[in-house]
Image (cartoon, rainbow, N blue to C red; front, top):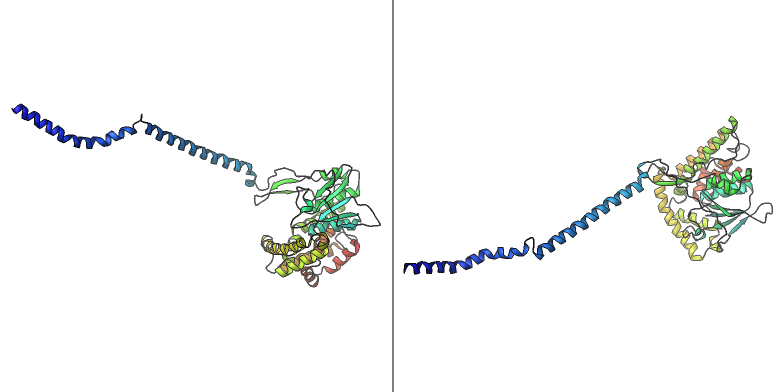
Length: 387
């Protein structure tokens, strides 16, 4: 009897305890699906591996990209370094058929020209080239370029003006950079022993990094005439002085022009209207294009001129900066003791300054210069010998 009671009690405890044991064991029973051998565990492990693989790939890509960017642009870390990647426009075998000559400049009844100048009529750099060509009486053709669309130079990778095409036995040799154009032509006209292609190679373009870390391209020897005899001290001094003032024109004087020509929006519009008259835009371009160039160009240059004023640290009254530079030039000419910087006749420095200033001759800025500086006498003398 006692044995039966004990067995019965044990049975009751087992039955009564089973739900409790089940409740305790249920979580662990469910966890068996997440053991190392279960499909869910394998799937989770696979997802983790994939995520790690993607994350690792992205990290490696970022590192490689950063390294490539650093080393491909490493010259930015070295201001003044020479990168030496020359850029030269190849010889043009034939002229594009769509080119339209807008004006022909002839001297001494010349009927043919071997030079074609792509220009804006009042671009100071284009005016420098024209001043030289007019002074040496070389015939040339002009193609006016739309300053907004530039479709006239679509054939060229070089998208600035002036571009001068010089006819040669192999086609047309493009020359770029106004100072280089003048130096190359002066070299060629003095001694035609070398072809224009050979002379163009005398002025290689060099790519370098400036103090701001930006890559630029320039022609280091562009102020030199290649066949000048500088053996005598006096001649060497004259050529050095000429180069000094040509460089001053490019690096100082020219930067005072735009902030003055486009000082206010109304002055900018008046300047562009004068440009349209000089360049005969209404004759050479569609009406809508002329309107776009005058008003769109004026607005853009008015905005840009504010940045240029700050960049080149001009005075608050930008006219004063222009007056100072003009008087600096006049004083240097007077100290040199002649009518011109070149003495009794202009040298390349005279032509550079005259061409640069003539670009704003129809603007209010130039009228103010005439009234407030001593530039008039020299400028008038230059005009007489050039025109």
